[in-house]
Length: 186
Image (cartoon, rainbow, N blue to C red; front, side):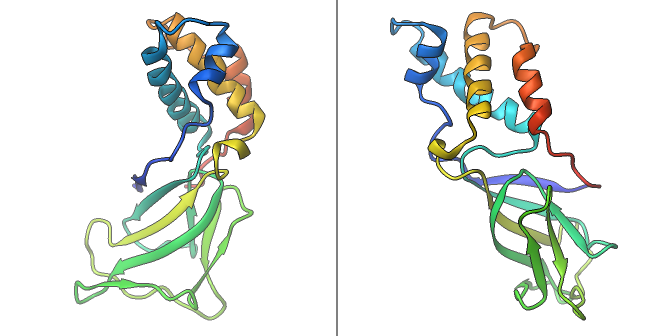
């Protein structure tokens, strides 16, 4: 099993409260708190459903071992930079893997980290999660998030504010999610 944790949350949401309220045709301020909560919840749901990050977010992905096929896959997509790969060596000391050992295929879906020619993964200790990759995923700032994903956030935000007891995705959101989904490779 692979674990993923958020190290640094996105600095902003993909849509503003004003944008979401304008979409929902709400002019008063009575629901502002609900809109703020719903925007975040909508983004998180859509990110989870698509295996994508909208606004740049820093993640740590933990692996129980080096891969048997020499590839480590990173989600959510798109990954813009791999900051570091750290591992616990056979002496129990955390080391940073040199970039001379691995390469990153940023254009792949999902992004793949693989060994360079004639390189081998270093020996690791048998800890539960001895390998940690820190990376940034997202489209950058909110202004660069694809319009369809922003629309999905606005539609789902309105749905959550107006139908707080309904957990179903609206059909338009489900269609957008399906077209943006990145399937994990196990």
